[in-house]
Image (cartoon, rainbow, N blue to C red; front, top):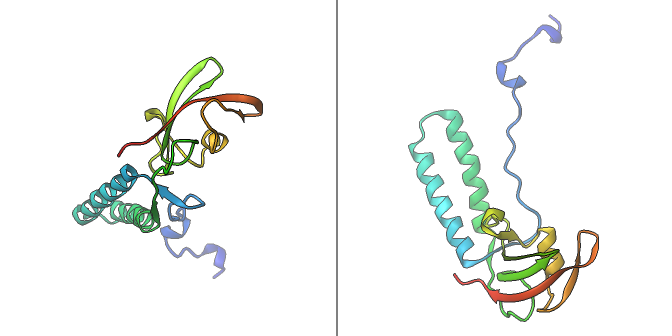
Length: 155
């Protein structure tokens, strides 16, 4: 019989399941980010134990592997100074006519709805090492962002 008419199983036609992608670069975390990682791991470990169905359990185990890797590679980093914008700082800045305050945190801790952006985000990268009063280029515009204030993120 021709191979074209043979069917091994339904599984061979399913989409492959890949591991969750790990963001490139160092895994910097704040103290709050590390606590969030540990809480997420504990939550997933409990969910895996409670799950009896195979497919949902596989999905949980994949998430558990991701968060386990993130915990294992986490580098606890605190702002050492508030003289310049850096990882672990809260920055007040003016962009156009709007003034905003954001915290620069790790990739997994980032939540723009809570004004926390990843250190790898374009806005954070543009502001890195800028000091109060300095204007930096952003989004193709010269001196688009003015740094107003810098403070350390409190745990």
